[in-house]
Image (tube, rainbow, N blue to C red):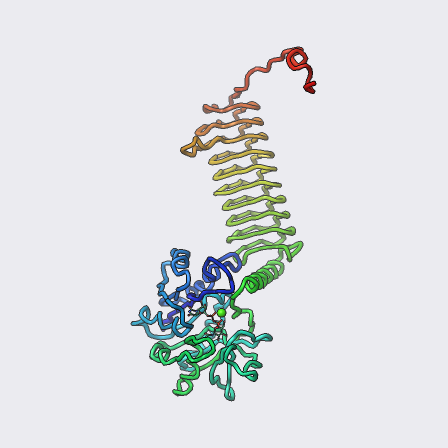
Length: 461
Ligand code: UD1
Ligand code: CA
């Protein structure tokens, strides 16, 4: 049976006080609407329509890589019923069930949505509402029942004191049968406290006509939390973070201080890995077993093998580190760095787009960019690849077992052959053949008595 999804995301999000669309603010490291759109994809939606309005151009641009979406523009924004009507042309030839999601409700699970669709279809309902029992229903629409059955939904601003006491709320998530839906939505009026066309009014309309309206209640009200303010955004991120931390600890990861472990939901970490305080791990990073990640590290879009050590205040981005290697403190790997196993990258070493072979070492103060470095290479302190000539980037190749003395500049493109030796302070402009020594620093000269003669002493007096 066809399943169509409509996502409402046209609202202004006034309380965010943001120049960006509300639904692009990040929950668990990703724009919240991406999480909602993932649900549609997961459920195998036949079509997904996104209703945009406020900052429509920015929102469409941010979602342009999603090829499976149809955008419709709601302008002006006259309420949730009006928003749904703007999706009518894109669903003109559609039939079956339609799932209505909200771009600002990102924690819904596939399980709840599958349950919603199954309940809706089994009952042959025209509309099924996802509800939740909450401690503090303030601001939400309340579910008014007659006996067991839902009778209508009343918005917070229109509710009587007795209705305000109801703790069962509308999540704003629904399943509808498309047959006759838009004609029914058109009968919704805007005589209410906000002068808006309220989609929840459809419950009373359907009930009066004798069409079936069902409800499903979520087990965990956190699932239907919406975001309307920065405080709610922070609270939701806190929930997501705590759940991730709990799952990691249950799977055998040590978090020395869960309160300051910032680990995105899509990160994977193997057992016996230890995460010290104040660590950030993001963007689908995968970390193996028995690694140790020290304070202040930020690891993003990267892959670490087993028993890797990342020392304090290192940044690892879009990079790959093999088993038993050690990085940092204060190291920076970015833009596709690959570190072989048993390698060591020490203090103040920056690498960019570089392959660094198994067992190689760069202990201190180096910049290695656009380089291909073999196995068991030793890079001395102060080594710099001069990879940029002002116009283009060039490759530096250093073959297995080579030794690069301290304070060396390698002017790319250049190759240092296997087991070659580059003396301290060399500017390498030409290839160094395998097994040979390259030196370019001039012979040291001593001029006796120069200081007293020329300068009258070293203290300048
Ligand atoms: C809505 C429901 C309320 C429910 C709550 C759950 C209505 C009238 N009320 O209230 O019963 O408890 O959600 O979170 O539906 N939107 C548009 N166009 C519009 C107006 C809104 O696209 O003209 C979008 C918003 O961007 C948002 C969603 O619809 O994604 C919900 O709108 P919002 O204004 O946040 O509704 P609530 O007042 O929260
Ligand atoms: Ca809302």
